[in-house]
Length: 257
Image 1: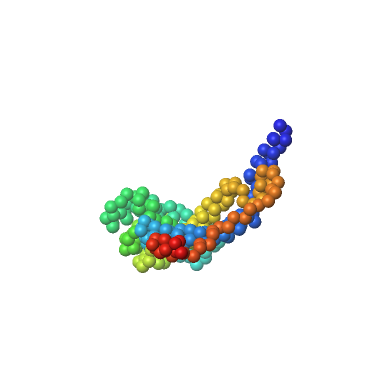
Image 2: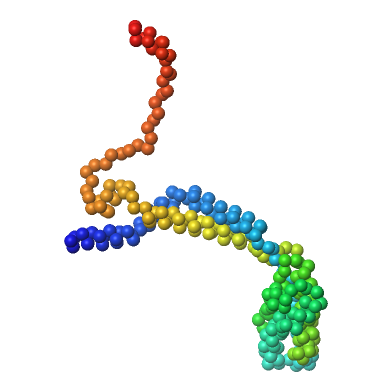
């Protein structure tokens, strides 16, 4: 009884043991399948990106906020620090409700302020007071118009609410000529990588679940039996030459002779 339990425990331990060399050989022998899966994944990603994903265009405009202290001759480090901190407040004003509603009214847009807010992103380079406003839209012309309208509207808000001296335009909104997203090369690379990983995963799973006996060593290892001999089986027999069938009358004559 104890012996049987020990054998069962050994079998259980063997089931979770993976020979990395055999696994590598299994993957290597099916390398063509793995590569085909990678090519298929890249093709699916390419077709899906072109057919299912809507191209988006991004227009960017930049402004520089000039405070009243900048008009004097002496600008201290504290002034610069204060200006940098105020830039964070300016960023919040860009997507504020009054700015969004004014842009919608000026351009006569058929959307809610929340929808317009999702199209706008704002950032500022570290240590500067330059606001970079980006607008993403399916229509490149609309993206430029919204970017310029947001810039003009927020410039008024910053001047009136934050008591800034002026908001100077660094760059007007550009008219994008190519989509900013999706990135077709990136999606193709991701699709190919997923195809390779999926194929390797399936092959590895089949290898792990395959418990068939293939060699005499497997018989001794898994069943604990000694093999006396092994009979080689050829994969196929050579076909003999085709013999031409004689007519029945000729066969009868040959037999009489």
